[in-house]
Image (cartoon, rainbow, N blue to C red; front, top):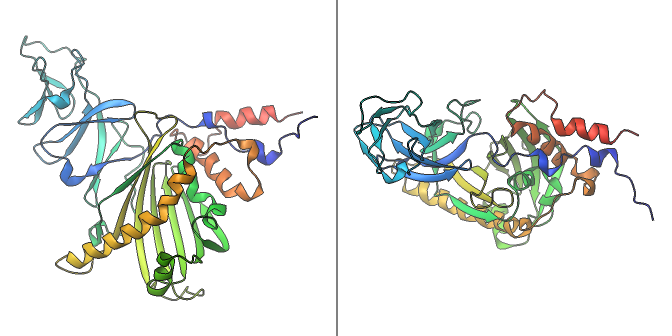
Length: 362
């Protein structure tokens, strides 16, 4: 029996090989108070890195393996504004340049550590896998970071490639399943920047569990979701809850802000993903106690909302030939991501697209 040939729809989806092992974009390094004058090692981008704060308070990230013999600089110490290797005492400035070698006065011109661009926002530090970033650190659109308070982040480890985890937000069929959300109208999907993909859609909260009952009772039955993904790594989600379906002229009854980071794990970057979620809420009280209680409550609700995804995505497999018409928003997202995560111009046709076009010719 002959197999049914792939349709044009199937062939338009990129293969898994189109996505890099480590996408190129901004990564969350940690909360600001965790970046101190003490050198700390971290595995990221497939490399061993070290981070610390310079004397002027700037977050510094550089390769941790000493140029000399590869000792781990995170096991060293800071002297004034220089990190000192614990093996032979070589000293590196925050620029990465070697500035002192105890054994001789002449310093090789190539003796330097690779450094990485950092940025700080909303009491969190981010790092870009290059000495210069390819676009500024993103945040929630039209929101002042100082007006928000954050709850402690929570994490999931999922046995699934990073690029497939991120596509979950553009899988509109999925919302009606485990999340009991009914899509109202048609979603609006756009790219206002080569590295960004934005989805706006309205859902009705239809679940019968106690969390959804509380959501409808105290927040509203309808939620307008605004999701912007940057390079497939950082997603900024704004959820505005309303009590009426015709709410265009109404102020939302409740609003939540969620920042999600999806990255490969260092132990198995091609097969496993780390998902880290940080929930923010608008700061109201001067003392901050009520704000912290409110944002932690939202955090617990959202964690419970997302938890089923970790079970469903474990071991998920992707085959472009199995996608259907209803997967179009997800297919378009993956086509965009295959280019954006490789840091090429969005107008540049990716290699996988040309190969698929050739393979589909008669």
